[in-house]
Length: 252
Image: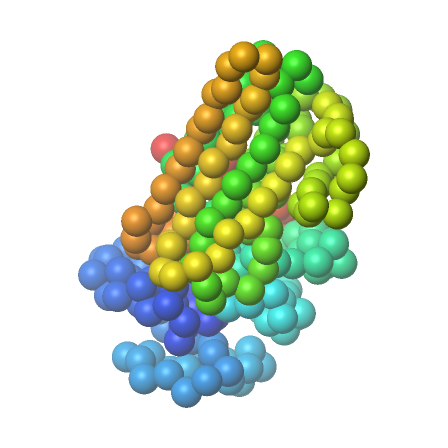
């Protein structure tokens, strides 16, 4: 059985993953980390250095502020890390890549298998449609989400950029841009409200026709399924490096 540490175990996603792992004979949570008190069937620590249990993989659904301690622990203990939290700075992403010289690290802006398949479709579509079509991304999330735009919106924008084979400028705030839209831009808009788990739309707008791709999440269990699947995959890896959902999908 795979032994996992769950960072952010007291959060909404942490509780979902806890419940799913309890019913999964292939993986067990042996310890959790959370800054707040958590009632759980496993030991919960406030910081990584306190952890006493041995583990095969760490799943992180906390926040970007926990990354430094997480990487220090995982590199010291040689524990692979599945980083599911988003909103990381460029410096933090660089830290993950540096840690990946020592251990396997999985990172994805969205743990949904559907979103990762959508990224492939967006890349292919952008390659075919080219700069004759303007790309706009609209993402919607619940009112408790802190980072905006979402990590998923960036994933989709990067997929379109790869398909276009051109460096694009991301525009987030058009009301302050008093100029005509040009073809070198990708627009990204964020909506926050209620309990929306997650909705992403990618619009390709051309002359006299519009193509729209849309992905909607109705339950956070979708993210948990992806995270647990990634943890099982990464626990078998001994080679350091950066991994993503494409690797997990290709492995099945």
